[in-house]
Amino acid sequence: MNDTLRKILAPTLFIVGILALWEWAVWYNQLPDYRMASPSDLIPRYIRFWDLFLIKSWETLWRTVAGLGLAVVFGTLVGMIMGFSRFAREGLYPILVGFNAIPKATVVPIVALMFVGQHDFNTVLIAFIISFFPIAVSVSIGLSTLEPEYRDILRSLGASNVTIFWKIALPKTLPEFFGALKVAVTLAFIGTNLMEIVSPHGRGLGDLFDSGRINADYPLMFAVLFALAALGIVLFYVVVFLERIFAGWAERSPG
Amino acid sequence: MTSSAHMIELREVSHAYRTKAGPLPVLDGLSMQVPENSFCAVVGPSGCGKSTLTRLVSGLMRPDHGQVWLHSKLVTSPRPTVGMAFQNPVLLEWRTILQNILLPLEIVKSPMSKAEAIERAHHLLDLVGLTGFAEKRPSELSGGMRQRASLCRSIIHKPDVLILDEPFGALDAFTREDLWCTMHDLRREEPFTCLLITHDLRESVFLADQVVVMSGRPARAQYVLDVDLPGPRTLDDLYSPAAVAMLATLRHQIQVAQGRATDADAPLDGHAKPAEVTA
Image (cartoon, rainbow over all chains, first blue to last red; front, side, top):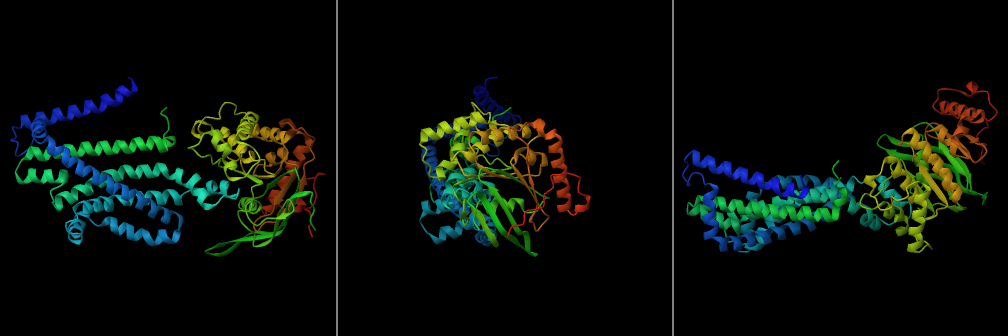
């Protein structure tokens, strides 16, 4: 089978298959849509609330991307500090792990109280907090496990540490960085929605989800989940695309 | 006493690593000289400080005691006139082979223009048998080919001194012999002084003008063998009586270094020569 064709056909087939199975299960069990929505229930919701879906998706999307962007900058910085200084690594690690262990749902009300009314800021903050950990850890591991020979080939010629960082350490860490970014993308989404749902402020897909819940509009809630999944897939593949460009060399050709 | 004929000179070099269990002395009063454009191989038991020696000569480390001289200049820091290659070819996977080979020229100021450098890189690739591989990625090359590319990189900037730390150690026997011949080709093309660390006695005899046997840790020069095989050498020369006798002598010296033999067990041979005593 043609390679590109398979790449499009395989996921399409699987999605259609799973939706069909779902539709059938709901129909077969005669479940009313206040107990289990079926895919065919979702389409009217998308049609009816299309404008809302667009507006809310955009709100969720930009705040997620902003939080992720902050996580990339801050996580890389912390990762660099931890990667180059053993002292900093040993000092920061327990703090980072402890911080990461705190359920972020408990941080949401605290942040909401701390910066009352700053909804966009709070949401970006939570998306950032939840997603910077994997980035910091991967960058620090990538840098601290750089084989000494890599350093030595440049150092023996009199290269400075800055040169070694730009020419070797940074590019060599990129595959790990993108691996972490794929995890961070989905985490950032969770962060944004956590804020939108736990501390409702009328913005984002979380808000639409919440109004579905309040109005007992079960199919709407499912429709929001699908919209979130779609956004997640799009962002994930944006990262994959960037990875191809900047770290494509790390990918082995099959066979 | 400084002799300008010596490209590399170590004078009473001692070095210890600081470990949890206290200082671990690896070199103890090591003295040796390598004349300009000659090839010196260093052999010795495992863990005797051979790699430490390469780091001291390249200026990556400074010895606790003693001095290292390159070209009559005291070594205090890394110098761009040195080229290095290791057992691990350490090619940068995100660069093509050509970009990898040109890497030292991004650090070292060279009189070569960009075009000249690229031409030289292609010439070196031809010499080591990698014609047509300039635009490949390291992941597309076999282990032996990567090591060839690594050798090209180590001499692209025309270093005075080439330091090789077991560059052929991880290769299979036939590839290794191929690369030995490549080394001879490279030296014929452009002379350089070479310090080779190796575990392979045949390799040392085939490639070197002088083989230094290091003692066990803490190491000093235990024995120096002048390899007087006529050039140009071929692999067949390794099976000549003279070469076999040299190998037996080296083997014996290694056993002495390991503490498994004494001088009394020395093979009967005319090549034995006591270690040079340097004042």
